[in-house]
Amino acid sequence: MSKKIVLACIECLSRNYTTDKNATTQSERLEARKFCKKCGKHTLHRETK
Image (cartoon, rainbow, N blue to C red; front, side, top):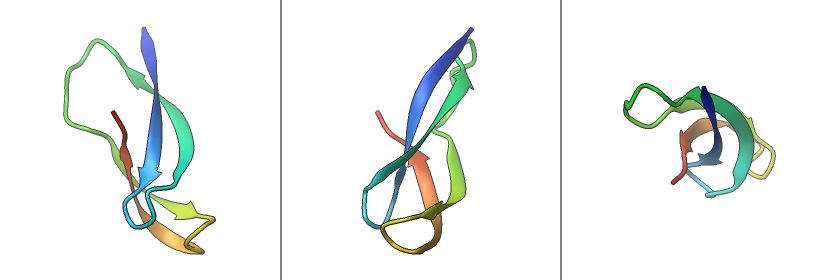
């Protein structure tokens, strides 16, 4: 069973990406370096609440 999550840029707080996460494991928030269209560069994106 997977849960849909949203990833937001830590610099401009723009919510750019959606992905799936395994709902059975309770771990910390997902973090990934992704390209932010608003910033125009690769930044760290974190899972939002």
